[in-house]
Length: 402
Image (cartoon, rainbow, N blue to C red; front, side, top):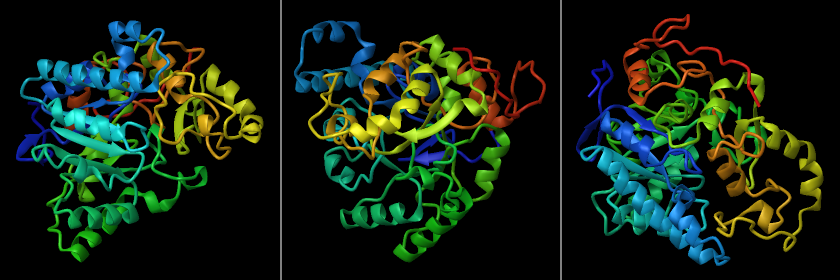
C-alpha cells in the first residue's frame, strides 16, 4: 500500500487509502479500472449502468432482441462478470458498485451487486431511502450515499436511523466541479454557495450532533474538482476523511474506455467543458464535442416539441426510470443518453457524449497508471512527470482535438 501522511479510511473495519475512485458509466469504470484501484489499497468502483456493452457475446445474443426486460437481465449478468473480474485482479481489494437511483432497474442492480460480493454499494442521482431494505440480507456490504447538501444528508440519516442503519460513509458531491450527472436539480443551482465543501461539512457535523451521531463515526468524502495533494490536504483540514475522484481516473492506462475517450478528456480546455440538462432530468457536465455542440444548438426547438408518446427508447434498454426523451418531458434533455454515452465509451468522438469534471488534470494531457495518480494525490509526488509545475500540481489542459 502507498505510504501517505493522510489518515487511512476505515470502512467496515477495513483500513483503506482515503480515495474512492468514482463510478463512471457507460463502461468507463468497469473491472479493469476498479480492480487496479482496489489492488493499490483504495476503493475501486464499477459503474453498474449498461455493462452489457463490454461483453461481445452478450451483445451478439441481444442483436435481434427488442424486449427491455431481456436487455436489463443481460446487464445484470454483465455486472456479475465485472465484479468477479475485478476481484480476480484484486483478491483482497475493496470493490464498490455505483448504482444510480434514477435507473429503472436500480433495485435489481443493488441486489445483484451484493450477491456478486461487492464490498460496498454507492448510490447517487437520487435519495436512496430504500437502500437498507434492499440490502437487508447482506449485512457485510457497506452502504454509501452520494449527496450534495445538508438537507439531503439529514433526510437520509433520519430515514435510515428508523431502519436501524447508518451510512458507512457519505460522499458529498459539489456540482460546480463534478463530471457527469450533478447533485443539483436546476442549472442555475450548480454554482450555488450552499454546496461549498466547508459549509456543507460544517452543517453535516451539526446534523450529527443533533441526531446523536458520534462525530467521526461516519466518514465524509467530498467529490468534485479534487486534482492534487494540496486540495486533498485542504479537505482533510476541513474535517473530511477522504475524497471521491472521477475524471483523473478516467484518463489512466487501466481505465476501461477507448483511448479516444481518454484523449478527449485529457485534451479538453476549460472553454470546452459545458453544463446542460441531461435526459435524466438533472444537470450534467461534459466536453463540447461535435455531437453535444450540435445537440445544444437544437436543444430549445427539441424541448419545445417534446410530448409524451412521441419517442421510443432507441437502445432497447429503457435504462432510466424517468427519461426526458422517452417520456416527452420538455424540462429534461431530448436525447438517448445511453446511446451517446456508449458511443463515447467506444471512442466515437463525433457521436459520443463525454462526461468530464470541470478542473484540470494532475498530469495534464498525459495518460498515466493508476498507481502514479494515487501517489500524486496521496504524497504530492508526481513520479516521472516531465512537465513544469512540480509535484502535486494540476496542469493546464491542452487544446481539444476532434
